[in-house]
Length: 335
Image (cartoon, rainbow, N blue to C red; front, side, top):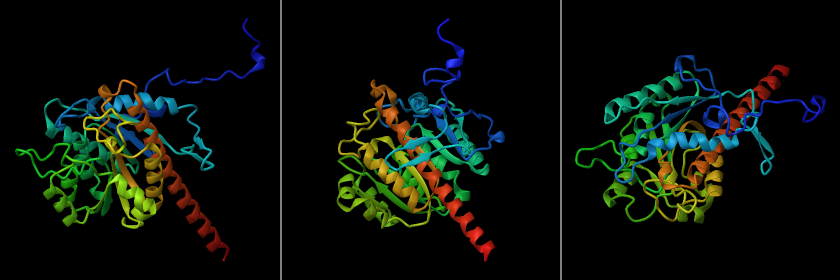
């Protein structure tokens, strides 16, 4: 009636606005006992740790919805600048849904987060965690103890080194201090830190005494990415914690504590690629996306794009490493 069927092969397009809204429309596996994947994406819709504007509990859902834009075909993504295809089969990426939250009960929420990430690690998958406010990084980090020693690299506007505030040790201003107290973390780099209100002077002093490398976007622009990498241990295992307010609010306004003077998308993209080549990324989280403060949706869109970018860089380096190993084994067999 409309056109002859022999003129084309009918396909199931699964366009962004159709179907179930998993991250980038990857397959869903909510039973972690059945997990069999290279990458496991899991959401943590939690914002009880915020000190000002809430809303990050809606972050995972908004990031997922934004990510469907990049879901065409699931056959990999070609980058013309790098002339590379990223995240292509047979790599297996799944969306594990969200960690269960118990309203008003920090302890149960953190226990649930830690248990879920531990299960993902035990299955050999790379945990990719969608926040949620930055306090969720505390149980995520605790769950990585079997992968240590680890170097944590933070991209953020704020130092997040508060010891406690009126007895509260687990707010979103404390994750880096809490990680410094974990025995499986031995190195720390805090990138993008800037501006009045990032933290108290004594917090900066404590972070520097721990050995943390602290740099603002302006300082990083002066020395370049290679200058940054020269101060981060090469070949280490890295846990990356990415607060969206590390990006300038002109690009990503949808966050609870925006701070002018942040990174651009391209700067962060290049930094993440360089980190993935400098050592082995064993886990990362992306936190503080708060959709109510960005009616345009560009914060969630940028977050989704960067998460996919970083997954692609990490998996490409693993692919290259495996290829080199196989090549060396072949050469040795011939000898």
